[in-house]
Length: 483
Ligand SMILES: [Fe+2]
Ligand SMILES: [Fe+2]
Figure 1 (cartoon, rainbow, N blue to C red):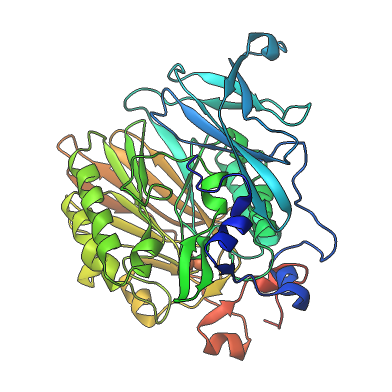
Figure 2: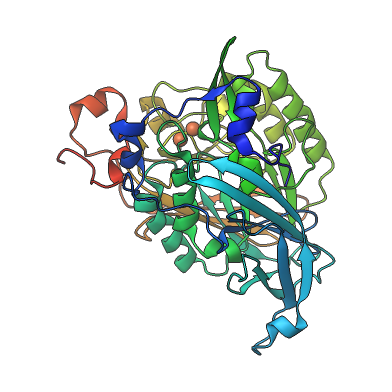
């Protein structure tokens, strides 16, 4: 964990630099609209019982894995136990104790200790059981399997923005996904996990961990930061955007990224796939373009020195937008040429609160370049829904509005099998990328014959703003309006 917040927490950090976090909301009840938490009835205060337990990659996944969790300040040390898992009940007698780092962080629900342990020197392809420490107690035993060394087939899940009403509406998406693919080896999140614009930010993070629940303790996550992981700070020189202080204390992430961006720019090699995470929000908040170029240089190094069979790149802002009135030319200029020159197989994105899938979008065509193409996907898992642009409906091979989705990706040596499924488990989109021994690719489009889904919601105010649903109505109430 690379926390910059030591004892005293973020609130003290803010005071030290004269900044104030613009939480807003407060007594107006705005917070309640985005979470299920009732004002005056705290739901996510830290206790001596470990919570927010999440596995992430740190180091080579065949040899190591990280776990991060939260307690109140009565639990002062990061202590975990790990053993090779077996069917017997005596795990604790065989377990090895591993210690890590604890960071104290103050959020709206109080001062918490965030603990981070990296399990290292593990055996490849081995099922381990572990538990993490609280105050005079432990978490339950969780299990995970280390990666095999080198290529081996596996499957993973990918989610677009959860962001709003996360407990209310995202829960069913991630839970249906896990029931659909219980053998998932990682879950990829393309940013905007939470909203962080008003109300109680810590409640929103509490809901994100609540939605995934124990899955986060069993299936490692790959998280990319979106613009909603950035918080607006008011400073004498004006407002500035900084990565949420929750991010580095809640996720223990690989540290191979470029200087200054290590919290959200990193790569993971898992059984023949290089997963690369970029921080498009940081790139776009920097008007000079330097942050985009810094990541481009790092990306090119990762792509040019890549021994893996497949490459999957994740970032939040799409190369080509699905939603109306949105475009990210800086990303197109800085990153897209590299993605295609180095034959990245799959680019997983979010931000647009709609679904779009297509190839070679920068050329304004949905045509797949035989042998070398890169496939781009934009998706959404939560309830906030934007309308697709007319151009997107032409350029993308498959589009959806007002559809909560998760994606299943199965990786084999000679093919990558992709499926987008609705929150109700129905197949919405599919393709297979075939790859020959020489690396030449062939696209097999397997989209179902069902009609594309478009917004049927009738709220003219929302529609005029290019939206089908704000998503924030899904807290304690249902979506407003008819249709
Ligand atoms: Fe978003
Ligand atoms: Fe976004």
